[in-house]
Length: 336
Image 1 (cartoon, rainbow, N blue to C red):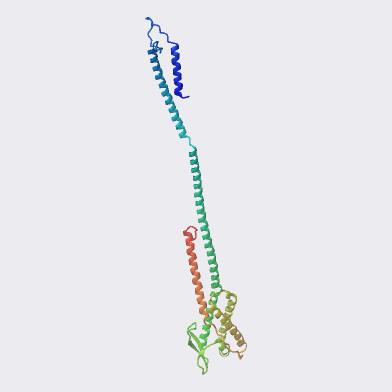
Image 2 (image 1 turned 90 degrees about the horizontal axis):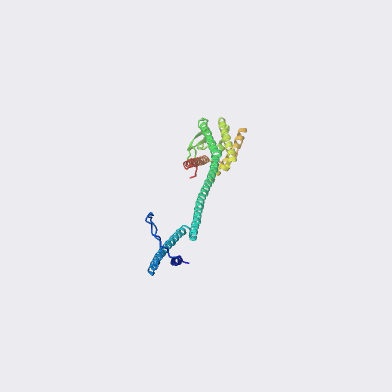
Protein backbone atom coordinates (compact mmCIF):
# COMPACT_ATOMS: atom_id res chain seq x y z
CA UNK A 1 0.00 0.00 0.00
CA UNK A 2 1.34 3.45 -0.85
CA UNK A 3 2.59 5.52 2.08
CA UNK A 4 0.30 8.45 1.21
CA UNK A 5 -2.85 6.37 1.43
CA UNK A 6 -1.75 4.91 4.75
CA UNK A 7 -1.20 8.38 6.18
CA UNK A 8 -4.67 9.52 5.06
CA UNK A 9 -6.30 6.54 6.82
CA UNK A 10 -4.41 7.34 10.02
CA UNK A 11 -5.56 11.00 9.88
CA UNK A 12 -9.22 9.99 9.40
CA UNK A 13 -9.06 7.70 12.42
CA UNK A 14 -7.66 10.50 14.53
CA UNK A 15 -10.45 12.84 13.42
CA UNK A 16 -13.16 10.31 14.42
CA UNK A 17 -11.60 9.85 17.83
CA UNK A 18 -11.66 13.59 18.46
CA UNK A 19 -15.42 13.80 17.65
CA UNK A 20 -16.26 10.90 19.96
CA UNK A 21 -14.38 12.29 22.96
CA UNK A 22 -14.69 16.06 23.13
CA UNK A 23 -12.15 17.78 25.36
CA UNK A 24 -13.24 19.04 28.85
CA UNK A 25 -12.95 22.67 29.69
CA UNK A 26 -10.00 23.54 31.82
CA UNK A 27 -10.82 25.09 35.30
CA UNK A 28 -10.27 28.79 35.72
CA UNK A 29 -7.00 29.62 37.26
CA UNK A 30 -7.01 30.57 40.93
CA UNK A 31 -5.96 33.98 41.93
CA UNK A 32 -3.53 32.61 44.49
CA UNK A 33 -1.99 29.93 42.17
CA UNK A 34 1.11 30.86 40.28
CA UNK A 35 0.83 31.60 36.63
CA UNK A 36 2.43 28.96 34.27
CA UNK A 37 2.77 28.63 30.58
CA UNK A 38 0.57 25.81 29.28
CA UNK A 39 0.32 24.22 25.90
CA UNK A 40 -3.16 24.77 24.51
CA UNK A 41 -4.94 21.55 23.66
CA UNK A 42 -6.70 21.04 20.42
CA UNK A 43 -10.37 20.56 21.18
CA UNK A 44 -13.07 19.65 18.82
CA UNK A 45 -15.38 22.52 18.13
CA UNK A 46 -18.98 22.12 19.00
CA UNK A 47 -20.09 23.84 15.83
CA UNK A 48 -19.63 22.91 12.16
CA UNK A 49 -17.20 25.81 11.77
CA UNK A 50 -14.95 24.30 14.38
CA UNK A 51 -15.04 20.95 12.66
CA UNK A 52 -13.95 22.56 9.39
CA UNK A 53 -10.97 24.18 11.11
CA UNK A 54 -9.97 20.84 12.56
CA UNK A 55 -10.18 19.21 9.19
CA UNK A 56 -7.98 21.96 7.75
CA UNK A 57 -5.37 21.41 10.43
CA UNK A 58 -5.46 17.69 9.88
CA UNK A 59 -5.13 18.14 6.15
CA UNK A 60 -2.13 20.42 6.63
CA UNK A 61 -0.51 17.87 8.96
CA UNK A 62 -1.18 15.11 6.46
CA UNK A 63 0.41 17.16 3.71
CA UNK A 64 3.48 17.74 5.86
CA UNK A 65 3.69 14.03 6.65
CA UNK A 66 3.27 13.16 3.00
CA UNK A 67 5.98 15.65 2.04
CA UNK A 68 8.32 14.18 4.65
CA UNK A 69 7.54 10.69 3.37
CA UNK A 70 8.33 11.76 -0.17
CA UNK A 71 11.56 13.40 1.00
CA UNK A 72 12.50 10.24 2.89
CA UNK A 73 11.68 8.15 -0.17
CA UNK A 74 13.83 10.40 -2.38
CA UNK A 75 16.69 10.24 0.16
CA UNK A 76 16.43 6.47 0.28
CA UNK A 77 16.39 6.28 -3.52
CA UNK A 78 19.39 8.61 -3.73
CA UNK A 79 21.23 6.50 -1.17
CA UNK A 80 20.34 3.36 -3.09
CA UNK A 81 21.54 4.93 -6.33
CA UNK A 82 24.80 5.89 -4.65
CA UNK A 83 25.26 2.35 -3.34
CA UNK A 84 24.43 0.88 -6.75
CA UNK A 85 26.86 3.28 -8.43
CA UNK A 86 29.60 2.15 -6.08
CA UNK A 87 28.89 -1.53 -6.66
CA UNK A 88 30.52 -2.79 -9.90
CA UNK A 89 28.06 -4.24 -12.33
CA UNK A 90 28.47 -7.38 -14.40
CA UNK A 91 29.67 -5.51 -17.49
CA UNK A 92 32.34 -3.71 -15.51
CA UNK A 93 33.49 -7.03 -14.09
CA UNK A 94 33.70 -8.50 -17.59
CA UNK A 95 35.59 -5.48 -18.91
CA UNK A 96 37.95 -5.55 -15.93
CA UNK A 97 38.59 -9.26 -16.42
CA UNK A 98 39.11 -8.87 -20.16
CA UNK A 99 41.51 -5.98 -19.60
CA UNK A 100 43.42 -8.04 -17.02
CA UNK A 101 43.60 -11.01 -19.39
CA UNK A 102 44.68 -8.80 -22.29
CA UNK A 103 47.30 -7.15 -20.10
CA UNK A 104 48.62 -10.53 -19.07
CA UNK A 105 48.65 -11.74 -22.68
CA UNK A 106 50.36 -8.57 -23.91
CA UNK A 107 52.92 -8.80 -21.12
CA UNK A 108 53.55 -12.45 -21.88
CA UNK A 109 53.76 -11.68 -25.60
CA UNK A 110 56.24 -8.87 -25.05
CA UNK A 111 58.26 -11.12 -22.77
CA UNK A 112 58.17 -13.93 -25.32
CA UNK A 113 59.16 -11.59 -28.16
CA UNK A 114 61.97 -10.14 -26.07
CA UNK A 115 63.16 -13.62 -25.16
CA UNK A 116 62.91 -14.74 -28.78
CA UNK A 117 64.85 -11.69 -29.95
CA UNK A 118 67.54 -12.28 -27.35
CA UNK A 119 67.68 -15.99 -28.19
CA UNK A 120 67.86 -15.23 -31.91
CA UNK A 121 70.65 -12.73 -31.34
CA UNK A 122 72.47 -15.23 -29.17
CA UNK A 123 72.11 -17.96 -31.78
CA UNK A 124 73.28 -15.56 -34.47
CA UNK A 125 76.29 -14.60 -32.38
CA UNK A 126 77.06 -18.26 -31.63
CA UNK A 127 76.82 -19.17 -35.31
CA UNK A 128 79.06 -16.27 -36.25
CA UNK A 129 81.54 -17.27 -33.56
CA UNK A 130 81.41 -20.88 -34.78
CA UNK A 131 82.03 -19.81 -38.38
CA UNK A 132 84.89 -17.61 -37.29
CA UNK A 133 86.32 -20.39 -35.17
CA UNK A 134 86.02 -22.85 -38.07
CA UNK A 135 87.57 -20.31 -40.44
CA UNK A 136 90.38 -19.59 -38.04
CA UNK A 137 90.97 -23.30 -37.58
CA UNK A 138 91.11 -23.83 -41.34
CA UNK A 139 93.42 -20.83 -41.78
CA UNK A 140 95.58 -22.12 -38.94
CA UNK A 141 95.85 -25.55 -40.53
CA UNK A 142 96.74 -24.04 -43.92
CA UNK A 143 99.28 -21.79 -42.24
CA UNK A 144 100.82 -24.75 -40.46
CA UNK A 145 101.11 -26.64 -43.76
CA UNK A 146 102.63 -23.59 -45.47
CA UNK A 147 105.08 -23.37 -42.60
CA UNK A 148 106.02 -27.00 -43.09
CA UNK A 149 106.50 -26.45 -46.81
CA UNK A 150 108.85 -23.57 -46.17
CA UNK A 151 110.72 -24.89 -43.15
CA UNK A 152 110.96 -28.57 -44.04
CA UNK A 153 111.48 -28.48 -47.80
CA UNK A 154 111.99 -25.17 -49.57
CA UNK A 155 114.27 -23.39 -47.09
CA UNK A 156 116.61 -26.41 -46.64
CA UNK A 157 116.65 -27.03 -50.40
CA UNK A 158 117.43 -23.38 -51.09
CA UNK A 159 120.27 -23.46 -48.54
CA UNK A 160 121.77 -26.64 -50.03
CA UNK A 161 121.57 -25.26 -53.56
CA UNK A 162 123.33 -22.07 -52.46
CA UNK A 163 125.98 -24.17 -50.75
CA UNK A 164 126.44 -26.18 -53.94
CA UNK A 165 126.74 -22.93 -55.91
CA UNK A 166 129.49 -21.70 -53.59
CA UNK A 167 131.43 -24.96 -53.99
CA UNK A 168 131.01 -24.85 -57.77
CA UNK A 169 132.28 -21.27 -57.90
CA UNK A 170 135.30 -22.36 -55.87
CA UNK A 171 135.97 -25.16 -58.36
CA UNK A 172 135.69 -22.72 -61.26
CA UNK A 173 138.05 -20.27 -59.58
CA UNK A 174 140.69 -22.96 -58.99
CA UNK A 175 140.43 -24.18 -62.58
CA UNK A 176 140.76 -20.66 -64.01
CA UNK A 177 143.87 -20.17 -61.89
CA UNK A 178 145.67 -23.23 -63.29
CA UNK A 179 148.61 -22.83 -65.66
CA UNK A 180 148.59 -26.33 -67.08
CA UNK A 181 149.91 -26.33 -70.62
CA UNK A 182 147.40 -27.33 -73.25
CA UNK A 183 144.25 -26.61 -71.19
CA UNK A 184 142.80 -23.13 -70.78
CA UNK A 185 139.78 -22.25 -68.63
CA UNK A 186 137.92 -18.96 -69.12
CA UNK A 187 134.57 -17.24 -68.55
CA UNK A 188 131.89 -17.48 -71.21
CA UNK A 189 128.94 -15.10 -71.11
CA UNK A 190 125.76 -16.98 -70.24
CA UNK A 191 122.52 -15.18 -69.45
CA UNK A 192 120.92 -18.33 -68.02
CA UNK A 193 123.76 -19.03 -65.58
CA UNK A 194 123.44 -18.04 -61.93
CA UNK A 195 126.48 -15.74 -62.12
CA UNK A 196 125.78 -14.50 -65.63
CA UNK A 197 128.65 -16.54 -67.02
CA UNK A 198 129.73 -20.16 -67.43
CA UNK A 199 133.17 -21.76 -67.33
CA UNK A 200 134.73 -22.35 -70.70
CA UNK A 201 137.47 -24.85 -71.53
CA UNK A 202 139.80 -25.08 -74.52
CA UNK A 203 141.95 -28.22 -74.90
CA UNK A 204 144.89 -27.96 -77.27
CA UNK A 205 143.93 -26.31 -80.50
CA UNK A 206 140.18 -26.71 -79.91
CA UNK A 207 137.96 -23.68 -79.61
CA UNK A 208 136.62 -22.80 -76.18
CA UNK A 209 133.45 -24.61 -75.25
CA UNK A 210 131.27 -24.74 -72.14
CA UNK A 211 132.74 -26.81 -69.33
CA UNK A 212 130.57 -29.80 -68.44
CA UNK A 213 131.47 -31.74 -65.31
CA UNK A 214 130.04 -35.07 -66.53
CA UNK A 215 132.06 -34.88 -69.76
CA UNK A 216 135.27 -33.43 -68.30
CA UNK A 217 135.45 -35.41 -65.05
CA UNK A 218 138.05 -37.93 -66.42
CA UNK A 219 140.20 -34.96 -67.56
CA UNK A 220 140.07 -33.40 -64.12
CA UNK A 221 141.04 -36.70 -62.48
CA UNK A 222 143.95 -37.20 -64.83
CA UNK A 223 145.23 -33.64 -65.18
CA UNK A 224 143.98 -31.72 -62.12
CA UNK A 225 143.70 -34.26 -59.28
CA UNK A 226 144.04 -31.43 -56.74
CA UNK A 227 140.49 -30.24 -57.50
CA UNK A 228 138.86 -33.64 -57.07
CA UNK A 229 138.22 -32.90 -53.39
CA UNK A 230 136.05 -29.96 -54.41
CA UNK A 231 134.24 -32.18 -56.88
CA UNK A 232 133.66 -34.71 -54.10
CA UNK A 233 132.17 -31.93 -51.92
CA UNK A 234 129.74 -31.13 -54.72
CA UNK A 235 128.71 -34.80 -54.89
CA UNK A 236 128.11 -34.93 -51.12
CA UNK A 237 125.93 -31.79 -51.17
CA UNK A 238 123.91 -33.23 -54.02
CA UNK A 239 123.41 -36.42 -52.02
CA UNK A 240 121.81 -34.37 -49.23
CA UNK A 241 119.53 -32.72 -51.78
CA UNK A 242 118.49 -36.13 -53.13
CA UNK A 243 117.66 -37.34 -49.63
CA UNK A 244 115.59 -34.19 -48.96
CA UNK A 245 113.65 -34.60 -52.21
CA UNK A 246 112.86 -38.24 -51.50
CA UNK A 247 111.58 -37.46 -47.99
CA UNK A 248 109.76 -34.13 -48.55
CA UNK A 249 108.69 -34.06 -52.20
CA UNK A 250 105.05 -34.06 -51.03
CA UNK A 251 105.55 -30.50 -49.72
CA UNK A 252 106.09 -29.04 -53.19
CA UNK A 253 103.62 -26.22 -53.87
CA UNK A 254 100.55 -27.24 -55.83
CA UNK A 255 100.84 -26.23 -59.46
CA UNK A 256 104.64 -26.10 -59.51
CA UNK A 257 104.93 -28.41 -62.51
CA UNK A 258 108.12 -26.84 -63.81
CA UNK A 259 109.80 -27.24 -60.45
CA UNK A 260 108.75 -30.88 -60.30
CA UNK A 261 110.34 -31.48 -63.72
CA UNK A 262 113.53 -29.74 -62.61
CA UNK A 263 113.70 -31.89 -59.49
CA UNK A 264 113.40 -35.03 -61.62
CA UNK A 265 116.22 -33.83 -63.88
CA UNK A 266 118.40 -33.13 -60.85
CA UNK A 267 117.87 -36.64 -59.51
CA UNK A 268 118.91 -38.13 -62.84
CA UNK A 269 121.96 -35.87 -63.12
CA UNK A 270 123.10 -36.61 -59.58
CA UNK A 271 122.77 -40.37 -60.12
CA UNK A 272 125.06 -40.21 -63.16
CA UNK A 273 127.54 -37.81 -61.50
CA UNK A 274 127.86 -39.92 -58.39
CA UNK A 275 128.44 -43.08 -60.45
CA UNK A 276 131.09 -41.41 -62.63
CA UNK A 277 132.84 -39.87 -59.62
CA UNK A 278 133.20 -43.27 -57.97
CA UNK A 279 134.43 -44.79 -61.26
CA UNK A 280 137.19 -42.29 -62.01
CA UNK A 281 138.33 -42.23 -58.39
CA UNK A 282 139.00 -45.96 -58.61
CA UNK A 283 140.57 -45.97 -62.07
CA UNK A 284 142.01 -42.88 -63.74
CA UNK A 285 142.12 -44.59 -67.12
CA UNK A 286 138.57 -45.81 -66.97
CA UNK A 287 136.46 -45.12 -70.00
CA UNK A 288 133.16 -43.56 -69.09
CA UNK A 289 130.14 -43.31 -71.37
CA UNK A 290 128.73 -40.05 -72.60
CA UNK A 291 125.56 -38.84 -70.95
CA UNK A 292 123.11 -36.31 -72.27
CA UNK A 293 121.64 -35.41 -68.90
CA UNK A 294 122.55 -31.94 -67.64
CA UNK A 295 122.24 -30.04 -64.40
CA UNK A 296 118.80 -28.28 -64.17
CA UNK A 297 119.91 -24.66 -64.44
CA UNK A 298 116.48 -23.19 -63.54
CA UNK A 299 116.23 -25.14 -60.28
CA UNK A 300 117.91 -22.47 -58.14
CA UNK A 301 115.63 -19.68 -59.42
CA UNK A 302 112.40 -21.71 -59.10
CA UNK A 303 113.14 -22.73 -55.52
CA UNK A 304 114.04 -19.16 -54.53
CA UNK A 305 110.80 -17.82 -56.09
CA UNK A 306 108.65 -20.33 -54.19
CA UNK A 307 110.50 -19.57 -50.96
CA UNK A 308 109.79 -15.88 -51.33
CA UNK A 309 106.13 -16.58 -52.13
CA UNK A 310 105.71 -18.67 -48.99
CA UNK A 311 107.46 -16.08 -46.81
CA UNK A 312 105.17 -13.29 -48.05
CA UNK A 313 102.09 -15.44 -47.52
CA UNK A 314 103.06 -16.33 -43.97
CA UNK A 315 103.87 -12.73 -43.14
CA UNK A 316 100.46 -11.61 -44.46
CA UNK A 317 98.72 -14.22 -42.29
CA UNK A 318 100.67 -13.14 -39.24
CA UNK A 319 99.63 -9.53 -39.81
CA UNK A 320 96.01 -10.58 -40.27
CA UNK A 321 96.05 -12.65 -37.08
CA UNK A 322 97.55 -9.74 -35.13
CA UNK A 323 94.84 -7.39 -36.42
CA UNK A 324 92.12 -9.95 -35.55
CA UNK A 325 93.44 -10.34 -32.01
CA UNK A 326 93.54 -6.54 -31.61
CA UNK A 327 89.90 -6.33 -32.82
CA UNK A 328 88.84 -8.96 -30.27
CA UNK A 329 90.48 -6.96 -27.47
CA UNK A 330 88.82 -3.74 -28.66
CA UNK A 331 85.31 -5.28 -28.90
CA UNK A 332 85.42 -7.02 -25.54
CA UNK A 333 85.86 -10.60 -26.70
CA UNK A 334 83.51 -10.57 -29.73
CA UNK A 335 84.81 -11.51 -33.17
CA UNK A 336 84.70 -8.82 -35.84
